[in-house]
Image (cartoon, rainbow, N blue to C red; front, side, top):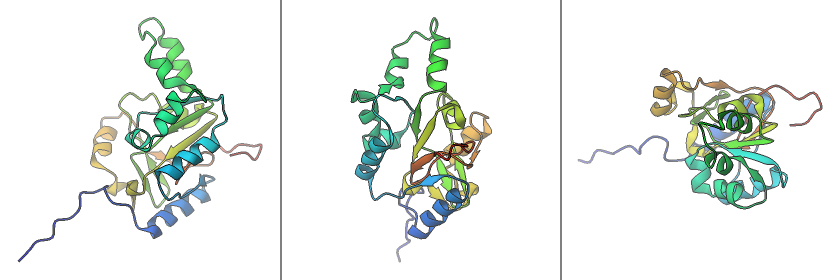
Length: 196
């Protein structure tokens, strides 16, 4: 007799129908959603979404690093990349400048710990540096969300995020109008000019 060993959670992609439900739920709240086939498609789309010369802050993210998006933004010279600039600054003497840079870039790019098919985004952050941009400080936010991160509801979100949340570092963000990601875009206040 053999006992099947279940795959570790959050390693395989969510079923297509779950992705569609999550996309529909976020779209109903004013998000612009694009479900893309792979990391290469996401890299191309992110490049298309960010104007050359824009100030861009990348949140610490394995999704961005492994997909190559982090390097595309922070080392290409195409953008005014904030992360490398901040890492070179002296935290003791330039703390206010660092805070200003990370809280209001033209574009914040990152990922989430989980996205539910009922329209909730779970954001966890060790330092909190990306939270102001995600919450509305950035002119635009783009979230790259791997299909393995799309779960049925908040109770199915990764336990490391739940641990971080109980420590009070980052509350779950409820999806709201305005923002973008592949496959989902983040929440914020609706723009009155009809832009996204």
